[in-house]
Length: 154
Image 1 (cartoon, rainbow, N blue to C red):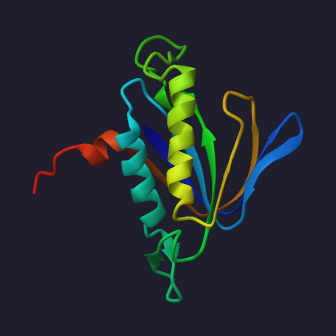
Image 2 (cartoon, helix red, strand yellow):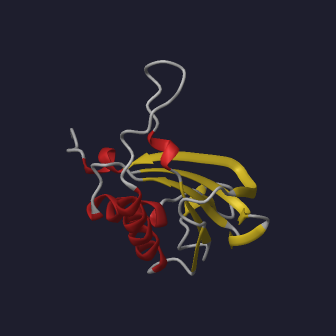
């Protein structure tokens, strides 16, 4: 499972001109689900993301998490994060999970986050969406659940 996190002041996602999900200060998360992902991948990412200290304290140091600032999340499913671009000019998405499984794990991830975050909004799975956001920093972090689950060397 791959997540791209962007720290935002606000974010919204629309389908057919209608806002379907929005958040205030917090995180905009693009989430890609691979064929190999399980509920454990969602659990690892959700725990890491909601506790990640990337919000600034009074001294300007990144010392606060989404929980500490009482922040919000907007999570958008994005299978293109699983693109393979090694061969040719057209990416392939063979590593992405089948839509039914991707949707299930996407929903599971958002449910886990909602246990610790005051608001977790979503886009519409499988829809063409337009995103409007005001990034903060910018602070952008890419996470891979397989990196989180790999044995530590030290």
